[in-house]
Length: 333
Image (tube, rainbow, N blue to C red; front, side, top):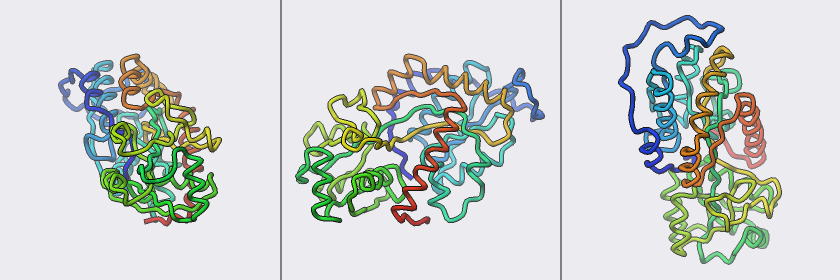
C-alpha cells in the first residue's frame, strides 16, 4: 500500500551523520516492571515497507539518534509485503519487553477492514507508542478539468455523477480513502481507477486520462508549479506551511481530514515504565528544532505526542476509516 509522503534523503543525512558500531548481542532479559536497565541490548525497529520510503527514513533517523543517546544500536528491519501484514505479524510475535518496535501508518489502521483474515488482532496485539509525524495529501486536477477549487469540482461531479474519474495508488491506500471521503462528505459519486502505486497514477493524470487524484506534496508540487496540474486543496484540517496559498479542503467541507501519519507501536504487554522511557526519548528526537524544520521542508509536521494521545488518535483512525470503507462498499482483498 502506498502510504504518502516521500521524505528527502537529506533528512537522514543531516540527522544521522554517524552510526554506532553494533555491540554483541546480550542474553535476552526477563521482562520487569522497571525501565532502569532498559535497553539492555540492541533494539529492533521493524518497518513493514521497502527501504527508502517515508516510514523507513523516519525509522532510520530515530534509530540512529536513539543509539547515540542510549549506546545501543537500533537495527532497522525492513519486512515489506502483504500490505504491512508480514512485518506487523513479526512485531506482535516478538517479546513484549520494548526491544522490538514497529513503524505503523494508516495501512495498519485499515487492514482489519481491507484484509479478509489477519494473523493477529490489531487492537489487542499492538500498543501505539508515539506519532512521529503527519503529512497532508494534495488534491490536484488535470488542467483540462473545468474546476478551479474544491466547490467547482464537487459541482461538476454532482452535475454528471461518475464523470469525475480519480486515480489512486491502490485499493485502500491513503490516496484512495481520501478521495472516497471527499465524495462521501461532498455527496457526490466519482469513478475510482486504482493503480499499482502513486507514480503510474500521476503519469495518467498528467496525460489527462483521469480527472484528479490525491498526491503527496513533495513529488506533486513540481507538476503544479510547472502548470501541468492544478492544486485545489490540502487534506489537513488547516493549510500547511509548505503550501500557504492552497486552501484546506476543510474550508469547503468542514471536518474534512485525510492525512498520512507515521507512528511507532510495540507489542502489547510492554511494561509502562519502558513505554514511557521510549516515548520520552523519541519525542525529544522528533521535536528537536532541526528535525521539525527538515520535516516542514518536506510538507510534513512533527508530532511527538504522548502514548495516551497516540493511542486515542490511532483508535479514532481505525473507527473513522472502517465506517467509510463500509459505506463506500470497498471490499477486502
